[in-house]
Amino acid sequence: MTPDHTDSRSLRTVIGEGVRRVRTARKGVRQEDVAKAARSYGLSWDYSRVAALERGEKAISAEELALLPDILSIACVRLVKLPDLIDPDVWVQVGDRVMPGSDLIKIYAGQGALRAQAAQTNRDDWVRRNVEVTRAWDDRDRLMRLGAIADNSDHFDLHALVASATVGLTEERTARRIGERPLVVAYLSRILWGRPLGEQRDRLVSERADAGDDPARLRALRGRVTRQLIDEMTAEIGRREAHGDLYAEHARHVQHWLRMRDKYHAVSATSDPELHQYRVDTDSPGSIDEWLTNTSRSEMDVAERSVADVREQFRELGLPLPALPDGFPNLDPDVSALAQVAAASEPLGAADAPDTSDIDPTTEDTSEDHR
Image 1 (cartoon, rainbow, N blue to C red):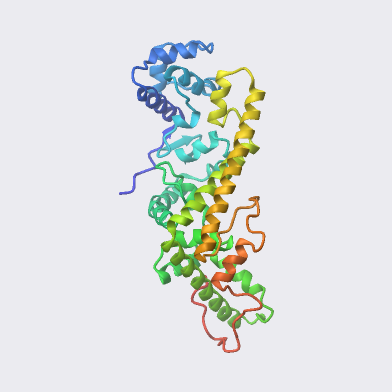
Image 2 (image 1 turned 90 degrees about the horizontal axis):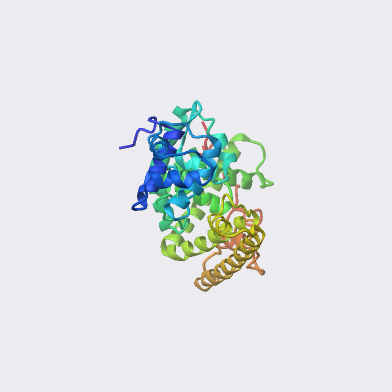
């Protein structure tokens, strides 16, 4: 049964529950221990203030919220970050809006632009969105079996998964035709072509010199292009079902490279837990910044070598090479990854376009979002 996420909680209630959860997870840590750590930062706290905070009875100031992670880190003798205090599975009331805890975590992790826009959505829209997110657990599992994603964490961001792939009528019809899940179809479309299936179809049709402007002929041509794209996707799914572990290994190394790149380009004491801990233990932030950039660059080099090794296995098996993200070093000097995919999947192009002389202009495009 889908949980009722309209039962939202105030931010201070969620923070208070998080403080209690973190404190009690460390055996023997008392409310007085938290209060003592707070007093070392100049706050006039006693155990009753901590108790009220944990019950959500007292508002917490911006100053206290900023210090809270360090206070708990001292009291619990382990690194605590602000996102640790927020349950990703609860709905949080912020002003007159409501948002999932998972989105609020990302705001505090410095990824707030998209979430700030999402926070403007009203509660009914969030509830409808939650139905999609609840169903996305099965989509995530399917994509993991296909090696499209490598994160099997219980805290996997389903909201980001749903937001990353647009499911339209074309994806739904394609999913029914090939017996696949619509969101999986949408996600694989992004991997294969970098855009939704419908956009890829329209792009290919627009590149055809013989497309003309007759509506009936265009519908027929779009239907034919859609069928060929479906064949490409079916072939991709078949390869991934046969070699899911290899695709997953490739995705895992690429994702690690992306994380290290972000760390390399965004040295931030407030968002990086390793850097934060080192800053707690030293008075030389400059040397720590240098350490972080050096280690993250080193990790990027390791990830690049790992990706190259996996791609060699793709070549040995005769598989098309997966596309790499923007900014990733060119590991395939002789032929690009997209060209490999195109060659293996035989996409519709200007040179290899099918003979359209037999297209019946009265044929309806049953694969298009045509009403």
